[in-house]
Image (cartoon, rainbow, N blue to C red; front, side):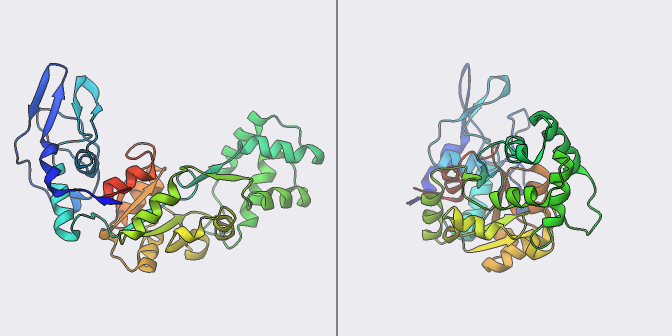
Amino acid sequence: MARVPRSSISALFRFSTKSGTYSLPQSSSSSSPREFSRGFGCRPDLHFRVYSAKAAAAAACGHEGTLLSDGFRCGWDLVGAREYLEYRMARYGDITHKALLVDAVGTLLVPSQPMAQIYRQFGEKYGVQFSEDEILNRYRWAYEQPWGRSRLRYVDDGRPFWQFIVTSSTGCSDSQYFEELYQYYTTDKAWHLCDPDAEKVFEALRGAGVKVAVVSNFDTRLRPLLRALKCDHWFDAVAVSAEVAAEKPNPTIFLRACDLLGVKPEDAVHVGDDRRNDLWGARDAGCDAWLWGSDVHSFKEVAERIGVRL
């Protein structure tokens, strides 16, 4: 485990095009600390005014830079990164955030097989005849419908909501069929972790004093599922919508996670794969936020942006 060196900040101010390497001025447009924590992406242009934390951590950790549009290559996003890094370091030293909040489905873990395949496979003995494409289309339709029984989809174990989804997707209302599907998605057969290095990274983060929590729109099966995947001990807290009575993007669930960790929202960064639920929701709560699969692609990358190297 290592921390990002302060001496590498100067690396943020070089970028190259196809025709050569250039240095940027050591100053840039002023902005507020809240804007520094937003983590917007950057495309170099004549104004050099948009920036993100990604540039700071990437350049400081020695990344080569990413080819952007119009032939530009920079140490990820570039301009303003110096101010962002110095702002966070001034508050916390080499570690830029006191807490990491992690989305569950799509970020921490994913289904091991396509949903429609499982619905059809389990449903064959119950007379389900829809193709996987039909099941998928019907599932998407059902999931987008307003859920009228309460303001939340996932209340307690979420059974009424999932019964509606399964019946709408397959045309089968057999209770035994539903129970088989419901129980299957509580086991480690149904899910696998997105990042094989996750355990090592979370251990390093916690070893560096960064607290870690899961923040998820899920029913009460999430905790037994994390235990089944043998990863529940990686986290200092779990904020589940079914328990908090708030679903992302409602900022309440992020604020609850911060309360459980004992940190202020501005001291936390949330990582998730959904722009609306994860980025917008976390930022509305006052947290920093990075989009999984766009801003970051692995938990090692997340740790490096926070200032912890493995």
